[in-house]
Image 1 (cartoon, rainbow, N blue to C red):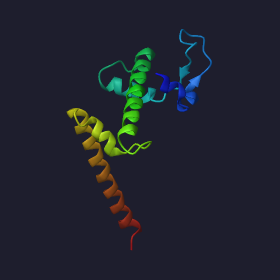
Image 2: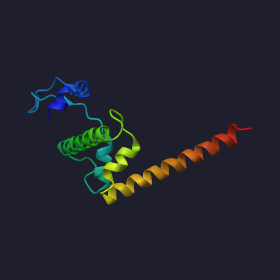
Image 3: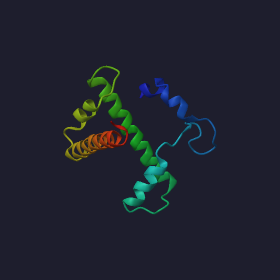
Image 4: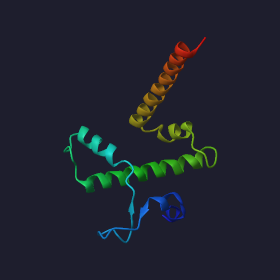
Length: 124
């Protein structure tokens, strides 16, 4: 895509070093490697999965996040991503929608619990 070449966020992630097979393309800084390794192990992979497997999975995750962000920016307020935009985009996928709903509910419960805790400790 031509959009990715114009995006300044990708410039910071490129590494000009390396003499591997993909040295001409540059290597991106791996952002989720540790978490993905743990998730892969949790879903039945080896405790130390192949680096290539983690890299492919990370590329898929980053591609998904990038696509969802671009879509969310185009449907809501221009240039801004809001939670409602993400919910709107995944509304037709029942598994993703249920998970997002659970996470948002849990986030609200945590906010209320923190507020109650702070009021109990620091309130009048």
